[in-house]
Length: 294
Image (tube, rainbow, N blue to C red; front, side):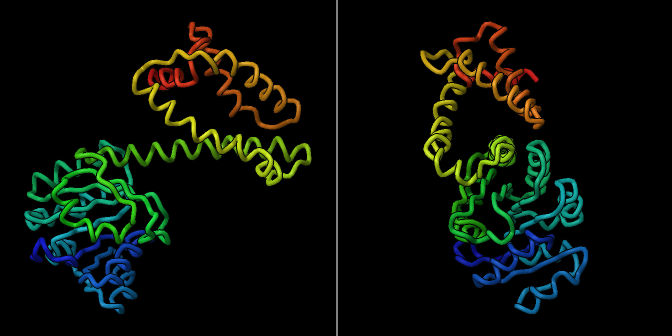
């Protein structure tokens, strides 16, 4: 096996979908000896032409490198592929970049660790063309020793990679948290775009004129995070009761224009229920308790 002090250790990539292909290409371009395997062998042709070693089996791929990277559809598939090579995993590092739930990631981690491997789970927060970009974010969880050993190699995946926890399930939660925040913001913006364009207002012009207000919203997140972490929601200004009229107005305006009111209606229900429960003077962060209960 390649020495731990090797700045360019051999890497095996299992799974050559869009992401796996990009990963293998990044390792090759940086001068790493790279073995590749895919169910459909032909997907490796372009990589082999660039110098990659085509592995006949998953076990051959595992045996070829100290760092085994797997990127497939689903953690059950990842484990299913690795199981026939379990006896070859001892002393190696498995980096699982497969999407799934936190529990699924933990299950693969426990299995791989029991087989004698060090384990890292990674959540890539970019699309395939972003692999290797210095600003590409990757959340890692698992063995700190493995993360430190292969830090330089991991930077080839994304320049802003960090070990967020020793728990292999946490990266999946981080990724979901980013996506949940993103979808909430995007859905809110697109509802706003529908409202504005219904009146013939250019959405881009709105953004130019409301830039300070929209940008300031992101500045609220650290404050909300602190309140959630402390479990203290009472505020002097900006209480939930002051959100209620605005939410009601948005719902009524949407209905009057024939625009889908489900998204603002959901917010109105959240705020109304919290106020009815006696939390009128709490900040918006109070609503985290509603989500927790469900």
